[in-house]
Length: 291
Ligand code: GRG
Image (tube, rainbow, N blue to C red; front, top):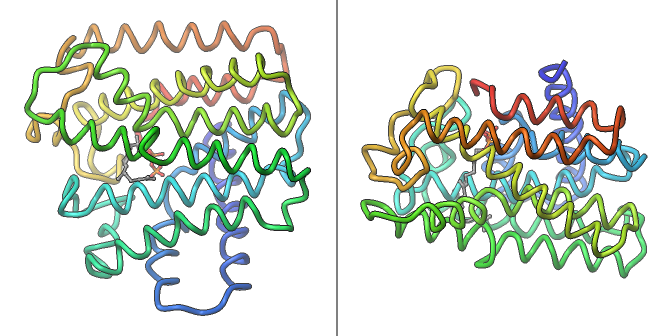
């Protein structure tokens, strides 16, 4: 069951991060950092990494540093996304956003610290990996997080507000804002499993498409979700004039597009047979989830 797997995996990542932070020196920022990253959120990117790892016989132990790094970057992006200068949201994961709880300055610094923590974790000596591969992973994580990835996508998201944007522009923005981190999750599996460049590129694109699917459902939840279950404010895209596929295609057509995208993704996994069972289940969940 996907929900049980999500809970189990989230606990593993939380424990890893708690222990990692324990080994570091104390600082005033640990509390807001933990508030932003631990004990909340689906940690679906980690589940995706574990699921994709199964296809290539990679143990969870080998993958946990990558998962924790990704979750630090993701939580950092959410903390900053909620700031008054960005989307100005007061609720995240069913509780007050980090800046509401700890103040804006601490939220900015806690977010920044989670970004750098991600790179500490992925370059840590406890992550037993050939230095060349570790370097490949680190570089890709940076590429997917910065102006060529999440941050660049967020800038487009904000600049597209109240503007009429084309289908391709919206897809490009969403693939950066959300797709790139999923793309990294899959690329990391290709690196750890020592796959060819061709296969790593295939995995990258697959990840980006899954990220796009994830973002489309996020847009649907903003319209049809329940605030209590989603854990964050809904019906805000329309108020803010956000550019989404729903804005230009309408709900039904956007939903059809998402269903076709899901089918295409699942077809690509067919060649892996039973080994892709968990990943396929997670992809089904991504489109039908209500949180
Ligand atoms: C450079 C990392 C970085 C960030 C700065 C603020 C910002 C730039 C980017 C924000 C990007 C963003 C918020 C994308 C939306 C992605 C998305 C659909 C988030 C919701 O993810 P879930 O549902 O959240 O996995 P939980 O709470 O379950 O972890």
